[in-house]
Amino acid sequence: MRILITGGAGYIGSHVVKALGKLGHEITIVDNLSTGFQKAVTFGKLIVADLSDRSKMEDIFSTGNFEAVVHFAGSIVVPESVAEPLRYYQNNTINSHSVMTLCEKYRVKNFIFSSTAAVYGMPGDGVCREDSEKKPINPYGQSKLMTEHMLRDLAFSNKNFHYVALRYFNVSGADPEGQIGQSFPKATHLIKAACEAATGKRTHMDLFGTDYPTKDGTCVRDYIHVSDLAEAHVKALEYLEKGGESQALNCGYGHGFSVKEVISRVKEITGVNFKVNELPRRPGDPASLTAESSRLIQLTGWKPKFDDLNLIIKSAYEWEKNRPY
Ligand code: UFG
Image (tube, rainbow, N blue to C red; front, side, top):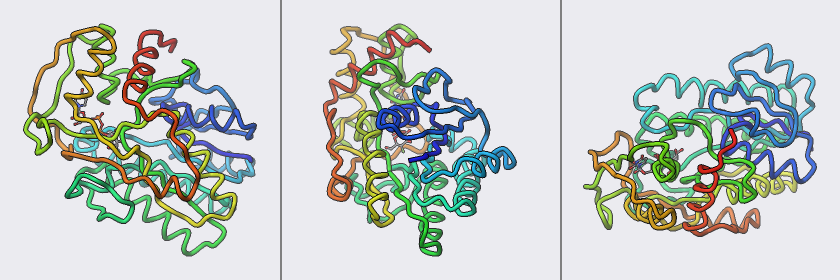
């Protein structure tokens, strides 16, 4: 297949580029390298461009003859979205609209969208089912939900267009072959921050909020290994290629760990007792989010291989120690 991957030089995108590249697909990547790295691109042709550059994007689509688009490019940090909402609506909603407009114009059949568990907001029992109520509590989740709505409406009006929106839970870990991983400096994600503290790249880490209504007062999340998530994209594309109906699908393992549990596991695995500062809650954080992801398994045949917090942490730590870029 000829596939356009937006944001393919970023953390998750680069793992999907590798998974699809290994299968022999013809890949074009468009990335503005704002949080991505040229060195993370292991397959395909990289075009450095911003999705808001209409004429460049028109050139890319008019010559690419793409059969599928996998759309990652966007902004992903919850507290940042609270501080800079308009940037999130630009990067996640308006730019997605532009990409979808070009997909329609150039008759792209299949579209995979990086959505998020943040579309659910604060589900009562912390468990998200695809048809649970969607009530985002931060601009990040709202900006992604608006794109999901555009996809739903476009697929309804245009029978040639099919999509899968993958709602990611907490993506972590690194390529087991050690070739790629999460590299963006000043990362805000928990396992990455803890591994940076364990390798001495930061003097300590912060723990945001110890008064949540959870087992130990800290937030609970469903941590999914990035290579399993990459495989979910491969499976979702195959599903659409076989004529599967448009869907939104959760990507998680279905069990959660608290922030305190993750931090103590990182200390145990690395043998480093780094300093942790307990701070008040961070804006925009729901208490608990775990996935019900049987629909992804049933519809696409996805089989997770790395559902093990220790393995996730080890791969993230190995990457952090040796990070080549
Ligand atoms: N946390 C800390 N200290 C840190 C970093 C994080 O205590 O240094 C806490 C957060 O407050 C939160 C939990 O760890 O309670 C997880 O935070 P992350 O920043 O790792 O991840 P988020 O849950 O905020 O968001 C991530 C992705 C979103 C996705 C969401 C779905 O960034 O794209 O998971 O659960 F929507």
